[in-house]
Length: 314
Image 1 (cartoon, rainbow, N blue to C red):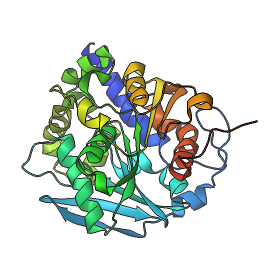
Image 2: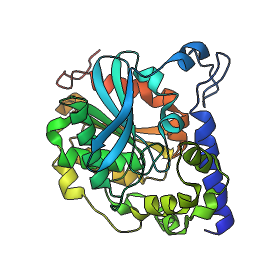
Image 3: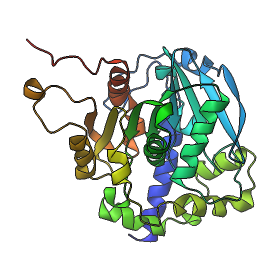
Image 4: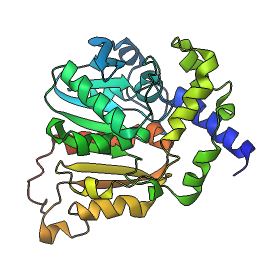
């Protein structure tokens, strides 16, 4: 994959997320072409009920809290921030839930510290945030990099987890298609130069001369092999896995875990598994955030469902 292609991917990635995840207008359309029914005024008027910095593991972790109800934590993808990743999704989930969002180490308003970046460390940071907020347990939803953090949270802090949602995330390095995994080592700071990702990172008060360090540090977590299969198979919490049919995550990777969690059987004969799997049509890795109108209802149904209920009958 040449540098021009990588640059194009980075610019599309940052620009598309920066625009498509912003609140729409009453006449705007979703990725399927259908008109959205959410009014722009109510979406833009939503303000956090709480926000600030939590002292966790040497970090001052920036967070925001929206809505009331059962708590759910949203963990963003690589290079993302709360507004860039979640601005369209928070209003949907906050209608009847307490939505907790944070910016991970070195991202957005959370300054970097002198420690390696790791999925394990970020999972511990989420655990510390819940303790700071005096939330005993929560549903956890992670996207892309955040999906890896969500898996590690489930492994390391099961007592704080109710149900787990992973969107376009992996639990081992070869869960990505081979060309995607091969591209990680070629993603350099230069491909993000002038992008919305760089501009927002700097706008949040970060030192512009350290942007290259930020990119390199974020990419470092995927430049070494990892395999958490044994640990992930021991997760007891119900799990909802969603990938796109044109995602960067291999179908087999998601299906193997789903089968290990009770899938791969006819529910009418054997009963329904507590975990769920969705492969969304017409959806890329970035498109997972664009096509949120497809998966948000699936996620809310999973989080609210009686997972011990019998299969539906005629």
